[in-house]
Image (tube, one colour):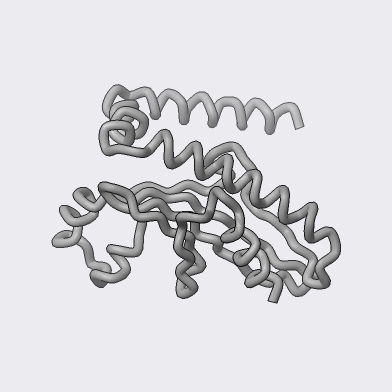
Amino acid sequence: MIFDKIIKDLLNLDFFSEYKFRKRDSSFLLKTKGGKQFIEMDHRINETTSSLVIYPIYGVRFDILSKWFEKFSMKNLQDQRDGASIGFSGDMLSMQDKFYFNLNGKKYATDFNELQAKVQKCAEYVFSEYSSLDKLYNKTILPILNGEVIYLMLDILRQRTMMMRVI
């Protein structure tokens, strides 16, 4: 299957050399001092276009944060421990969200190079910007507490409304 080939080829790259691949959820995992880094390779077959569609998700798990939430969660323990504390799709990072591979292998090298370059770029960003709880707090929580996120969301909504009026 083409997905297995993609995973095998990714594991041969320097960037992925320290990651372990977990088949049950199609995730690359790297244990860190305080948790884990995840690159989940969500995927499906699109019968209409005869292609494999891959949706990478980039996540960071902070053990101390996850352990604190364990007693409050309704999820089973394994689901809680498998999950990220914070995660992003490519779209959330203003990057490509979906990658398509022809099932017949046409353009494999081109498609693979695009996938690996963009996945690496997104992963490096997420794993750098969210490498500690302090960074997570400063980048995500503090703007909410300061009311900045609300204003940003209002600006985005205004821009979309203005775009809709133009169209």
